[in-house]
Length: 64
Image (spheres, rainbow, N blue to C red):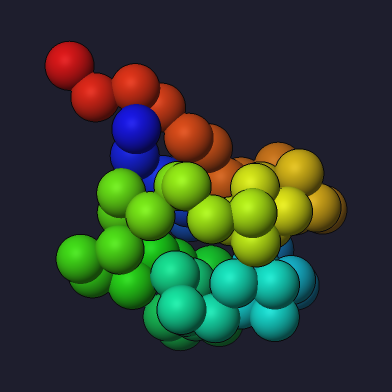
């Protein structure tokens, strides 16, 4: 599983950073996954960030 943030959809609320600061950051005002943390989907706070993202810009996808 892999976390990603769509920069075209994100409007920079910062909710993801507040909910899971060990996984998310902001780059140029938009949410982003901290490099190397793309697979940290097993933490409840990441799930909260995905569900609570007001722009629905965060996704978790299966790796192939």
